[in-house]
Image 1: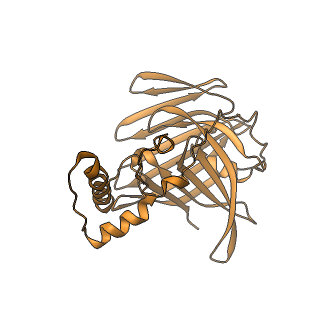
Image 2: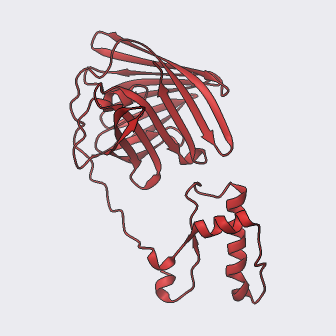
Length: 283
């Protein structure tokens, strides 16, 4: 709008940041650009020279304002149902490695997933241990592989979740919060990636409600088929899950094209300063 009304606009975009700049080189580039932008407006001066890495990063971040196009996302059109899936889970134990990369830190953890069946119900229980302490996450699925309940425990804090067709009830420390569901629900609970791996994703994708347990709020997600990738000689299909309103909030699931087994899942978490969570299934 400022550009279209004849005002000068400086636009910089750091593709490795979230809602704010945390990396020192990005911060220095941002302040250098702010100083340059404000100098003629305030009638002052600015320091033109800067460290080589800052100058290089600033040029990488600079966006030509003439190229920027604003488009309304519009209202999501929620899918009416998830594709039917058969036999996505197998009773047994699976070992997984987990890595969280945030800023300059890399945190390794290990997960043991136990899948069991009781009558028509499936129970998926993840137990994770590592530098962030022990984490337990158990979900119960019905015969249609829809979640009915979930319990998460970390650092002595227990979160209980109950699912219904219209809402998700979250109980944390005795405080209850109801989250309304629009359309269909896709909760990223233990085992959900195995269920998605056996689904046939339609060409137009799937639009569903998901629960962000970092914010305890609902969010709208799009599930799409991504491009195939070859990893160590094997072909992997890819499923992408995107926040409808924030493409930076993204999850990728890598599925063996022949066996339909999940190799790994990679998630970018804006609420955790764009932390990258990678979960890999071990042989």
